[in-house]
Length: 148
Image (cartoon, rainbow, N blue to C red):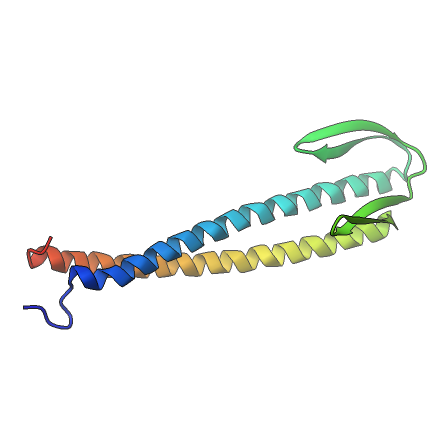
């Protein structure tokens, strides 16, 4: 005899489906977090390079990060501007101070996105925990009633 509180295999299906959906969503968020963290790292490296150039007043030898953990030793000569990507494959020349300010704003935006995604991830993981608890309880009821 199964009452409203009694678990059935069929009553577990929607919960299993939601759990699966939450797991996929959590994985998607995790991947987005990894990408956003990589972008933030690139911004940090770019900012550090620009600050080093500024510190040297656009003169002297320095290492310039060229991506993927690679650097090139270069001689600076009167560097006052840099070419900055502004999106959609478009770049403009800007003074170093403006470029640093723009990178700092992008870093702030990226960090806000990361914080938002971390919050979403935490909520999804919490929901998965709730669903897992319900599934465990229902499975125990099924075992107790001999249905499993």
